[in-house]
Length: 473
Image: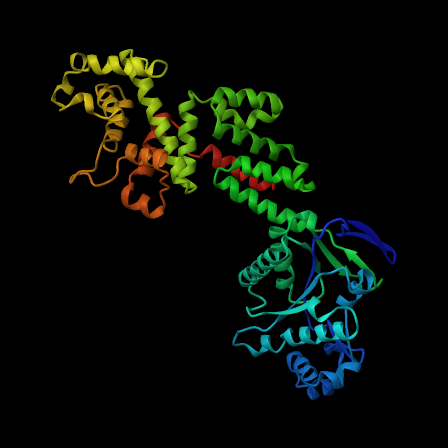
């Protein structure tokens, strides 16, 4: 990279003579990028416009049809000034985007610029700025006011050139095109081009100098949307990493945002004790108030259940089911320990064997079960817990018992929650909306019942903090 004075300004552009990195210039073409006898189309008289067909498209098509005759009266604006400053050898390729809309609207298509782009390419070659192999004109077929269509178009083009040139340096010339074209090209370039390989250049009409345009606001917009999207799915660590990598001023000045992402990342990935220790080391006391609900939780069970509810609402069904499984496994273990003395939390293997051995003696109602020894562990624990008549546990355990079992039967065609949990954990199953609706329609109601049992607040802690994060970014 080097600095080069441009009139009264200077800017940083890409050049490293020790590498073979390619540099490309992209420019949208507008109706002021070519001039005839020193005038752009909009400055021609009405009579002159009529002689050329009345529209910019007809004007440029007429000039192109007899290019050699008109060439002495034609000139390029904006793009040629960049080439004059940087030299013809600086860019490996100059790509001009001209509109040729496939829409049934003459008011729009009459302003198409593809043919103006072809004229520009010919002029840049004729006037010695570029060789024929250095310049390409590409048609933009979608409606140039269609943001989604334009984003798809520029994504495909940038992907193609990234592949062809092995991730080149990219300069964008703010030459012309519709407002939507300008924004779409810049936004998609921000997504697909490393920030160290991207420059946006602007020709100052007053000073006639080429200036580098700051992309900080474009990148802020993109990063903010990515942070919101990631946090909505519980991907707090990824959001924090994204923020740290981009190192953007408007995001980095807020400790609160960083702390929220940091704290929630800890909460999702590790237990409560470790989380509190990390929060104490990394976040000031006054900034830990937002985690009061987590700190005041009666047990880690509450937080695990809050995570399951949040992940379910976010559509992350595999994470939701796994978290809920952790919840009900620990809940049953603690419940049995509290009422019957079997420590399935700290001495699981020895205590679960003892519980099986003593089951028939202590729990006569299990005598009717066939092959008691072969019953799945969670099914067995639920049957033991059903001996507890204390509310609200009795109601919840009975509800849970309807959805924990072995294979589906004719009378129970829905998949049991523990079966799905095992498929996710051991077979890599990822449930989608269709599967949840068909096989686990009871899941939202089940975790809702668990929320009532644990007296969770109606507003999920994750969703509450996500709203705060959205305001921060």
